[in-house]
Length: 272
Ligand SMILES: [Ca+2]
Ligand SMILES: [Ca+2]
Ligand SMILES: [Ca+2]
Image (cartoon, rainbow, N blue to C red; front, top):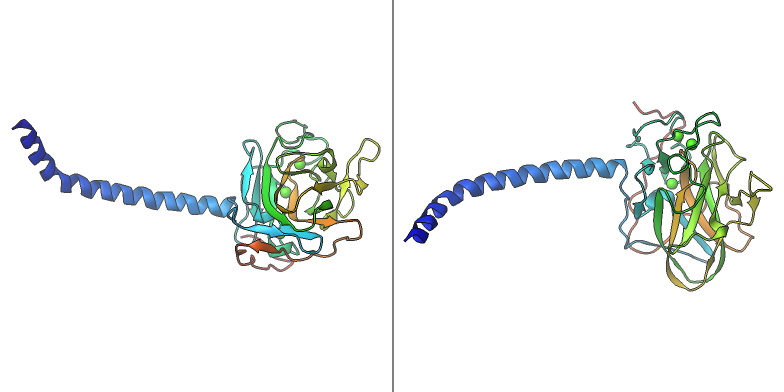
């Protein structure tokens, strides 16, 4: 009897609660979607891990902004800059550099609290001489031709404390991927493939490479060395004959579909 009574009350109350539950869930969905869109606009990877970049004739070309995952981003994080998005996440004193970036977009690891030698160097915060510790980007790639691939990165360096990065392969950080360094080509997008050494702080050529042992899918990673690093694109090139020029070859994929390119900007473009 009691059970039947409860049951009757519940049945009568059901539409009342259901309407409110429905309204609440709708509200949370809209709020969630808004936050999600905001977040996506700010920093989320644009690609799913189903998109795999492909090596063709010994060249693998990838836009930095097309990473599929980012980890270890508590202290510093990679943010994309393009015509519709200027990150605003703390100190970053130089101007944006969309003009002449490949695909009209690039990444920067922010905030940038060590801009000159006078700013305090804080390992684990604005610097990591060890690879794989901070702000790691991940890219799915596929090779047809195993072998030694030299890593080229197109970067924009405005000072002496924004010009280093590490590169790794399949969860490992080999010696030959540590301390990529830029000294030449300041204040413009510039390809380089040099390793900072004790002997040569500006870096030695042909020391940054990854050995691809097997054909098929692999994962390339990049991690922070210096905050404020601006990262446009990377190329893995088999052998030492290839030297990239301009914006480098277009990215090629083995499966999936790349998003539409970001909108081009003029040299005088400024965010409002
Ligand atoms: Ca900057
Ligand atoms: Ca810096
Ligand atoms: Ca780019």
